[in-house]
Image (cartoon, rainbow, N blue to C red; front, side, top):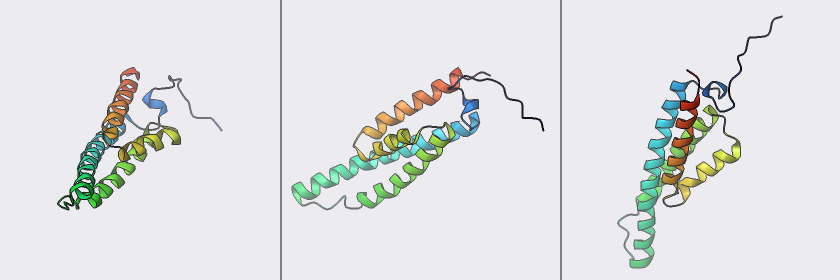
Length: 125
């Protein structure tokens, strides 16, 4: 039996991540969209809490289920991207939790995008 031929690559290169460059790019785009949508809805939900408990105004009550629905999509895109680039489970959990803290999903999105784009720029052609 012959073993498959492997070529050495750097630890951060996309060829070692298990996902093709196109697949990682598509998953990054989906993650970024989900991160922005979740972040915006979490800000609306925060405004709802302030209006509800501070002023008795229930106009934004719809924001809680919408944020919950979008957060589920955020979790799925985080796991898909994380498995494509072989994040450790702890990293995926931290990125996933960013969708529960106001403004943090925007910070996490910038960090993740910079990391992934840095890896793809360092990957050999």
